[in-house]
Length: 500
Image (cartoon, rainbow, N blue to C red; front, side, top):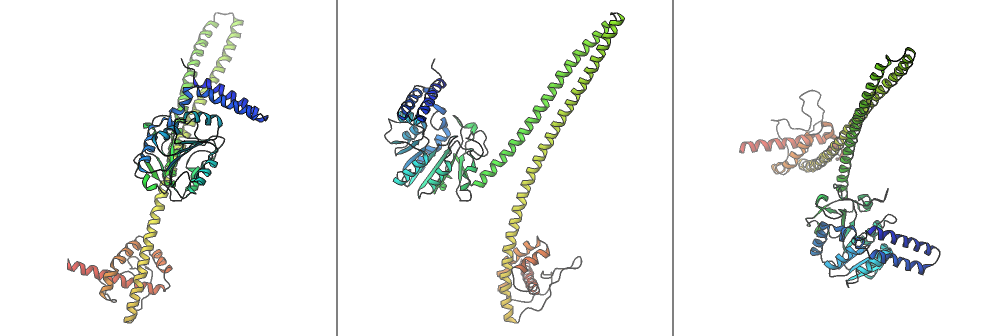
């Protein structure tokens, strides 16, 4: 039977703690020797050296994604931050013939990784902070023009991810950046690192990339079909989004789209928690009520038996016992009433939580409705702007033709005063047509049809206000132009009907 890995960890951690104490007292050489001893202890444990299930947390789908990217993109180098014990690094060195550059900040893990990576000549391992390491390789041009970055240097006391991303995207290179331990929107089965407020590996930590046009890629395979530790990942690129969109094992979208997906999942999770809490409370109330009623029934049986025995006692003793039993009976009845009160209170709590769940559902539906209305309003406003622009152009064109022929006959724009009145500026069927040459009728017909459809869906006052706002002409002139343009439409429609 092999020694479990945690026993080696206990010994290693104790040695490392002693090393830190020596370092604080200025005994650096002795402290360094102890760290090496701690690393040697952990190297003796096969369980520790196979940590997290193997390379890339033992996740076969993630390995498939990386292999697909290596086939599609001619990378000059692979850059890894956070070597740890070197499992993923050795996997990179096996599947990629180019340089693999990796850094580890903790000396104990650096020594273990160094031992594992000795057989791989294409690996360069550095004992360094990830930010300093990236600056160094960029200064030397070691990443080349196209590089794959695997970021795994984050931990509780230090979260350099934002700075690493800024350093990479500040370079004029093509880059694919895979971030380990990241939340996957819409799939809670993938775990991720959360070190407290502002230190969780979620989309919020990459909000500096919001609105930059970059896409964010997540695994297309669900966590149920992933192997190993099932840790999430996120991929962002520099100048390579179009290539990743063709990778079937990835899903890509912008920051806002993924954020909305996560918000929907969070709401569903809240509802599940509310339902679970409601069911748990109901079960608890039911179980407690059944238990207490069983106890009360047993007590009542004992009381009945005791009352039956009172008659066999002497008068004085029986009276005392009877008084005690009556007091006990009164106490028991009060206790039973309190049980009923608690059960009623539990029922009210369940009902309140159910009502709260319904309110959350209504709020969610209202938010969706508001979003749909906003989208409809934006679409209507865009159509109105397009139609009004077409009307203005048509009005100016007709005005120029009419000016050459002597101008429009004078018309006054009036609002309808009674039911059935025709708004000024719209054509009444059968009205005589006066105005421009036929070539204007044909060229303006599509734009005018769009205008009438758009204005027909709005109120008359809003349409006139919109027309008036974009034109320097008086409303009367706009009314004249609108009436003439409607006349052209009706004449063209009548001609088409006759030809048919």
